[in-house]
Amino acid sequence: MNNLLLLKQKNLSQLPAEIGRPSYDRGQLTAGIVHVGVGGFHRSHEAVYTNELMQESGTSEWAICGIGLRESDRRMAEVLRKQDYLYTLIEKHPDGEIENRVIGSLVDFVLGVDDRSAVIDRMAHPDTRIVSLTITEGGYNVDATTGKFDFSNPDAQHDLENPASPRLVFGFLTAALRKRRDNGLPAFTVQSCDNIQHNGDLTRKILLDFANRQDAELAKWIEDEVSFPNAMVDRITPVTTEADINYLANTFGFHDAWPVTCEPFCQWVIEDNFSNGRPEWEKVGAQFVSDVTPYETMKLRLLNAGHSVLGILGSIFGHETIDGCVKDELFASYLRTFMDVEATPTLDAVAGIDLDQYKDTLIERFGNPNIKDRLERICLESSSKLPVFLIPTINDNLERGGSIKFAALVVAAWCYYSDKGVDQHGKELEIVDELKTLLHNAAKETGRDKLSFLKLKQVFGGLAQNHRFAEVYIEMIDALYANPDVSVLMRKLLSDS
Image (cartoon, rainbow, N blue to C red):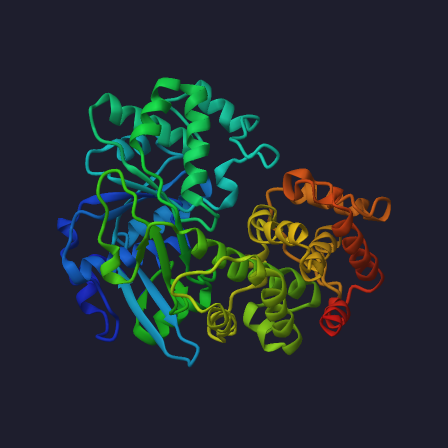
């Protein structure tokens, strides 16, 4: 590394010609966007759209200041600061072509665990016009039973009692909006970029729940002044590996401590509802619509649910990556059948989208051999994902009398996965989930009560009380616990369909 060129602003001109780089003057940029949750997806999606807009139009008012609210954000903050907030996007095509370019739209990073007031001040700054979020499903602090803000969370209790020193993102948003109101500044837009249906509506509801409890007068101002556009986001972005870092070093002779790898496909559909102006992202491929619902439902129930189907079943079988699953004809067939038989019938028509073509494209994207998206990433925080991605499809099919067996096997496999923590060959699975202990304890009771896992209401709602689903689920549990080779059940379901 001593002989490598470091990725910094002053060294951009020394990068090889085939590495794309910002052509705009980063010294003249203003951070009009504050983004909470700077991970791989943000850096392959919103930050890239913004970078491309700056490249094309020369706009300077929409640069991004990153925000980290957790101790786990510290390394990202340190890496970006050392690199002048630059990083490399490594775009891997199915045919083996790789495009590399440096992204320059991030210009600052504030670590909230070190200085909470600095986060509030940055959000409340007159330059800030959008606060965007990628905080994962769990970051919304929703009580799964009530659908409202979970005030039993100790951090929520802290934030209610210490409004100037919050811990949760909704405490920061409330404090910043209070400061803007008191200073006579217009409200910023709160823009969720998470894979959650009606993400803007959810963000609005949860923020108002919290603000109403803390300051009802402020909550009324937020309700009247703040916009929360719904959006559908899509780009497969695997976790960065040491191999990605070494690829840049060995191929191009420079060191980037945290590049981002992604597929070439990218999609962003946004409701055009902003409080205080917005970037013209439509100039670089984003789509602004009046209602994002059909697009987001399509994506959640096909792409995101499809990921979970492959992730959970593939993990138990012994596959390691999404593309490895798709190369397995059985898994590819199971996924397509689930999408055709159970997911698609629950979808409304989507303007401008051919659903069969969309599903063909999904399977092609999943099978990209150059995107080694590991199943442990797909399965992490499944307790937040499946209630959004899969269970609504099950509930819709129960109401309409549709097929439920393909999804039921996924839920039963998740029980086995949570209970045993190993694949069918005895290899330990890396399980990362905020509810890991709760899931394990419920799943291990399956021998005594076959519905014990399904009775976790905060995850499954009232699914255990549905006799039709419970009967199919128990059948899957019995078969899976008798023989953990999930491929046997998959073949049976496919042959019966």
